[in-house]
Length: 437
Image 1 (cartoon, rainbow, N blue to C red):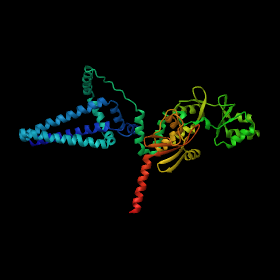
Image 2 (cartoon, rainbow, N blue to C red):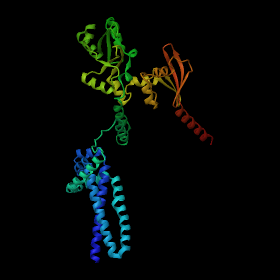
Image 3 (cartoon, helix red, strand yellow):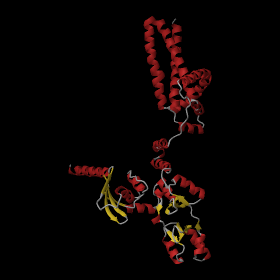
Image 4 (tube, rainbow, N blue to C red):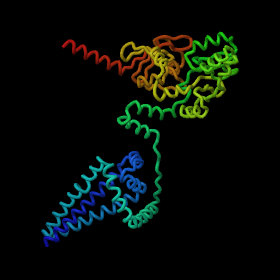
């Protein structure tokens, strides 16, 4: 009698252990990071292939685990009833049921699943090979259950076809943001900027028409050489009469000087030999598309034209790279410093031609307006006219006060960031209190 009871208790304990195995396997496999699994597959980590194969048929995997888990739990319950009856009749059955329920919940459900959530990779890769063997053995039974499941769905007219959806842009951004701790903030910001390229068009980052450095090939050679010597760029636009009449192309200054030094002749013919055919970019082209266009054409600069063919700006591969890594050239930093002057913390005097995207990026503002790229354009869009001096416009935490205007637009704006301004005031007040005390 005692030996048979002891044997049944051992079987019950084995059933609890098996139930814990299935519970932990289920939780570990379904909480396993899919990208880490792909990495483990590439590194040929033991158990990764089994885990991947099981997850390929997740519906059958769930069926296998449920069938096996419920089978061992029912078996444990039945054996516990027999043991309880052998020990103390009806009272023993009640005690055995209560004890087994507690033990199953604690040691076959809660504890295994909690451990699996904390260490999904270790549990999944360790248990997957054994679970795969069980999966193959139980597959005929699973097949029968799946037939009943399909019939059930058909009766209720439920579509049982599940399509694997890819990651959306926003989900990908969340993944990139969460990876910041692993790859660092700079790398994470760069990856986010790469994703943003699809949303940004060339005219948002272009050099506008009035800032394009260009030379008229019809000018005398001395005037052209003087302009080239004063140019801060490696390439300049070359045209005849005007941008609209005829654009000759992009002149590579270094190549032009090399050709002229070789022939010892400073002539327009040598200049023209160093001119590359211009590539034209339609306004509205995304930076992602333009990056591929530059690669395909093996060029670094493109001329942006509107729907009527008028030149509106210039885009270079450096402009696109700056969208990814931020301003990295000396000229850009100087320009930004000239555009923005800090009056006090949270209060700034900003040039009307300051780039809206640069301001948003630097101060984490959210100034948005259609078809404008400067702060001047933004305010003109809001006022619908050139405003008077001291005119104000408020948006969110920002108060913008017009300080200088001319007949073309707004030249200088005072921007007060109330959030930063109040934070600075509190900081100063706390310093004063410390000094007084």
